[in-house]
Image 1: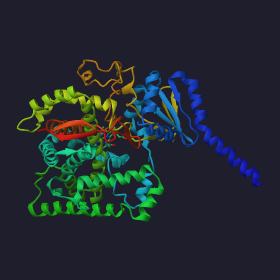
Image 2: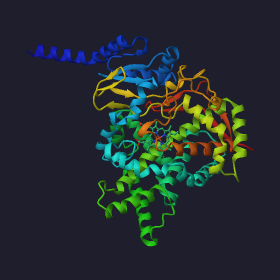
Image 3: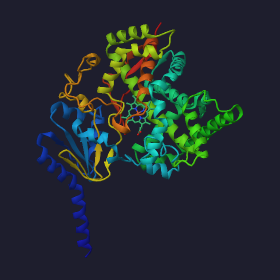
Image 4: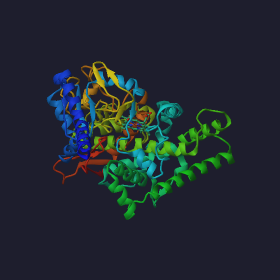
Length: 500
Ligand code: HEM
């Protein structure tokens, strides 16, 4: 009896392990050369990305597939017993961006689980990135207008100031990514809390630096395993009390603004996100609105914007500096453009428009080394049919456009770094409007995209006017760090040295 039970379990186990392979074979029969499949029992796509990362670039395996086989529309692999669909053809992923309600964000490495275990749900759950349904809609409509250029341009002087303060403090820079993130993080903090967060220290370090470190350790747990979590718990490394401490700090900052309003009346002179929230908070108490805002909404949204806006924009600027260190003629060209665009040493709303070459440069960097390679992994809420492709509920989906962006069907010499292509009338040969979408597309696209592009232009203009950008002489080959599978980052590749 026991033997039959064991055999039964073994049969089920074998079926589950082989199930993705059967799906891949079926797709191969249906699509022929247009489907590429890569099956590794149980480990699947995680193992493929890991071994590619060990060779210096986690994305190299997919780049190789697309370079050798531009006809591929779909790469299929597995994650334990589930199929993973990497959708390459824009015609297939476009409907999913447009109808984003068909999919749900997948808790990639148990982030929600950790949040519950650690009792730190205030961190992200109410923020835009992870909220779903009505809660997401409400938050998006509350903040949407404040991310439009007309509103953001009021923040341009602050962005100049934060960048120039950082530059004044540093003669040479070795840790370029961290340095740039201290600027992009500073901009998010100031955009959210205005002057109220001036001088905010966490563990005696500037908040924009320490907060980045804390979130990194959180992300490390997210992308690693329980072992690290317990190690941190048992050995007392990077205590989770940090989270509690900065929640207290944030509560204090919010209370300070509230009492200021009580004393001086509501002036709205700050125009920062805290104002937007406090305004909403006071109104939703008076009226019987369906969604009642609380202080935790504010904290959660701040952490979300810091997480979504700091390293992404930081990676864009750092990656741009690497390309500049490899091509000094571009460096000179962009310096000249920046010099002529600045007004009294400041980038203004008008001078931003003159940074045309710089904008093309950033676009080309994002095409080849995107700050977000894929949006967060998705799962269909129920079985879906996209054209002739059927995807079962619960499968994993990685949406494009990184692979479309390096495909010879869409670009001439796709792997060549050529910012000038963006000055051509038709840089993308076949384009359904979804080939070059570094900020995703549709209703769930990046709310911070204009802010990111304004910031990146301002920071890069100031940095190249003040520093020489040098490739790390000790490095023979640039390795690209894998932060999950999301961000592309050159490992310790550049140095900055103040110009005489
Ligand atoms: C170069 C910089 C940036 C890039 C490449 C980028 C890219 C993206 C992408 C691809 C998404 C879609 C993610 C998904 O659906 O899984 C996204 C979402 C988001 N981004 Fe950005 N982002 C950048 C900067 C920023 C900035 C500066 C902010 C705000 C301070 C921001 C805030 C957000 C938020 C809140 C979402 C979630 C939006 C929603 O689900 O409604 N991002 N971003």
